[in-house]
Length: 210
Image (tube, rainbow, N blue to C red; front, top):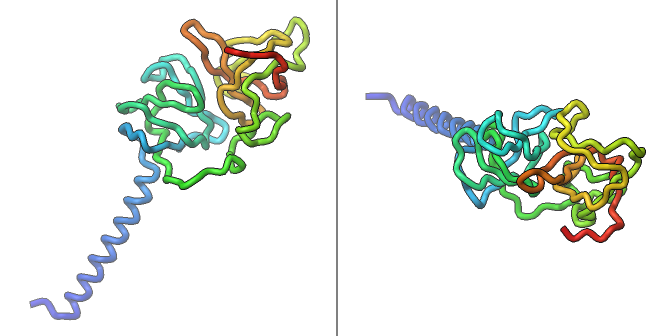
């Protein structure tokens, strides 16, 4: 027969181990990669360096073209189908596939204040998304030059499009992270999303209906 004081010790140790295991699993689940669709959840980017982005591609592999990007601390990503390493996602108007190992479920929140956005808007305006115009025009680009659109927020990234000087009705395709802004540009099968330097954008004065 086990002495009473040893039985109490064994029970106490067992309870402590279970509590510790529960806390560990809770932490791990918060950063667990996304694996399946849940329409009620949003996801955040994890394990991406502060000077890098998570690419959204046209198909479920790194060999497919980039159709959008998510900043390293991006939130509000929605998974719109089943995942098998790669997940079908939607973020700021861009849809495609992202590697699920870089996405983790966000903790549910009651409400979000736009003033708390981590991403910055173009320098001419307030940070509130509600105040951002939809359409912009090129400024500060000399004749004979062009505003280059890159597939990632870097001057060394692939140039996927170029806007002529004074081009207008350029549609903002998401928020901005200085100095880069996401804009839409025409592709073979519809609009695509790229990055431009925000210092060369100003609100469009034209009537844009597209």
